[in-house]
Picture 1: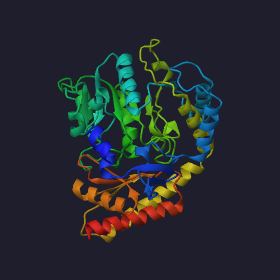
Picture 2: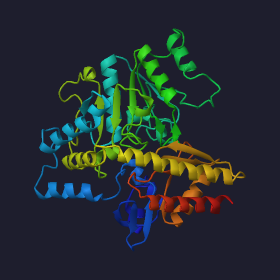
Picture 3: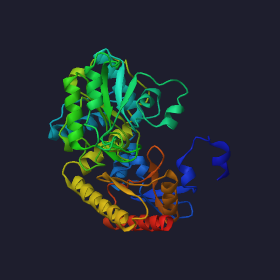
Picture 4: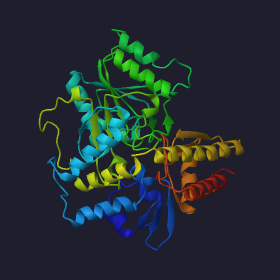
Length: 416
């Protein structure tokens, strides 16, 4: 371990919770270099919805590399990009009645968010963005400006401006009418609120603590945006690609965002890829006005295309994810009810679930006890008070039951 501690930056984080050296991975499992297996309920923070080294995606990548397919191409036209664009249009957008232009802003979720914010300001001629309490949108300066976590914001080193936070769903415990404060500020010429270009929202706040927005709240937000001529940006970086069941997490609400940000599992194999989807009339970019070296990583196009063809031409994965999510929810609900002396909260939707504790210390101890039982989990929330459960969507029924047993045992050990 010395080389990691002596050479790598102090900024490293996940490896501090899991102080072992991993060597191999397959499906829902990671293996230490000595062969010790760990069941993965982390899934690359949502970047591995189809599991580690998925054999179908792996074979598509091997075939592409072996035939000397283009790897790096900036935004040049390639066969791999054409296949992806056609497949994404036919498999994802057309069946859902969506009409978006597809922008490749760079390799990561923060790139998708930065492009969305920049475009919203360019289209509207306004500077202000509305974000929400406990939001997380990335670590670059624009994305940090619409992020809520004070520790992450503090890393910017400069004031983060031109963004105004509003209460997320249930932030005030249901005691105040939805959007009362927000709409009052919009309508009051003396409020001091700069006219917003856009609102950016996560339908489920992953890093913010597995906070789920109700469908009716999302519909109310979409209506508010239309009435006040604000663009609606949905950040689906972590919750998209089936994490909550449907391909897009906003589908159950029946809304159509103006701009959608995708990354993480859109790369299929854990490959870096990000998309910013935008209404065609918003596509007013000048050529090269937003660019970058890694906007077209062709192996990611190959893996993504194969993932779409394999998992999204029918509803099997969606139904499986919803059923498995209900199973996780039942186990968590039963755990909460069985331990009345330990205040806990069962949270989440689909296979984005969490157990909320009174303190971050307690949640960390639970995740540590889970790790000692061969289960990888992370914490989330403003104080790290939520133990987060996000296995690959391809996790088997037996693996899911096994992991939940390990989680229950960890909670009992820590909280009894």
